[in-house]
Amino acid sequence: MFTAETKVRVRYAETDQMGVVYHSNYFQYFEVARAEAIRDLGYTYADMEKEGIMMPIVEVQAKYLRPAFYDQLLTIKAILKELPVNHKIEFHQEVFNENAELLATGRVVLYFMDMKTKKRHSMPESLLEKIRPFFH
Image (tube, rainbow, N blue to C red; front, side):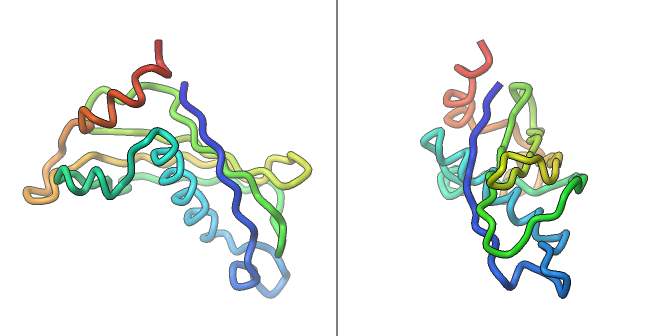
């Protein structure tokens, strides 16, 4: 299993009239955590795109348990429970506040796709080499 953590401070513009983080902003938090998780492996989305591969989201789910508020420092986890073996990669995500309380959970499924043909593609070998050691 591979797990990475990223910290994000809630900005005022991300809150609603009640001072609570607006629900759709969690999807941006999830994205930041996924991108940073890949970066932690020594690879980036830009590297992938140079190889002609993109990763569109094909499914997303979120469950909100507690509110997050302006200026809180959130910890967002990106978790790979299984080694991707084909064109699909599935991230499980968790958001915690500064008191380590679980605020939200999510699941995001992305496909590896050829940027030119828009057809499914296997995970780039260069990324697979970096992820594989976490699943032995």
